[in-house]
Length: 251
Image (cartoon, rainbow, N blue to C red; front, top):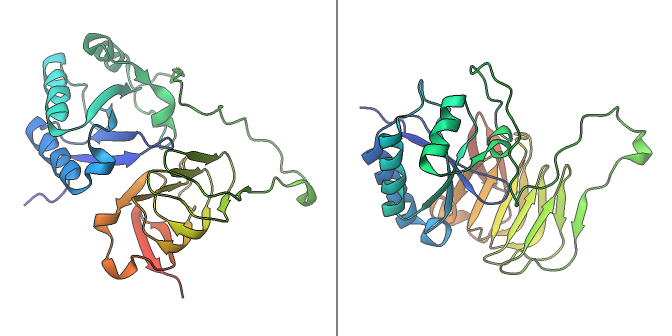
């Protein structure tokens, strides 16, 4: 029996889901997405989804891709773009009337095997591009992590670019905290926390009281329904181990 999922869903740094298609089985992909929406409707119902065909040996034909888009919509999510890939993928995006989002995919992995250099495609929600690496400054000049002193309320988003984020108060339901580094929350976490947003698999999340709608490290995520109930309300840490998201109580 094949236990591997047909599509691996990852969460991007602005909360947009990236569906990397591993098996081009439209019915199976739609069923998996329908199950995700049923388990966590507040997170996934009518959520924006980017389709990434980079895990397939060949780009789907327009008819199959269009059938997938329609099936995912019927499953409860809204495909809004394709992840950047080969020239065939670009032609498919044009055929479907969808944009290409190059930067989203680049956060997790480089485009390889196509022999082409990815061309940046702008989108309004992208943060400023990460500058080229520079020589490390003297220790006394190191940039501090970002500190959020006020509560993060429903509908708010706080993003710490290229650094850690420390929240001294609570992260409310319906809000989102994002960091390219680790996230430290000294109050209850009831919204979403996404660490390692640019792909840093060493990033971690720490919080005093765990009630999170969703947590993610380098795109690997879990929703509250997937987490043992004995951890709810407890101080926890979240980290990535061999591409598997781990959550454990803090001593």
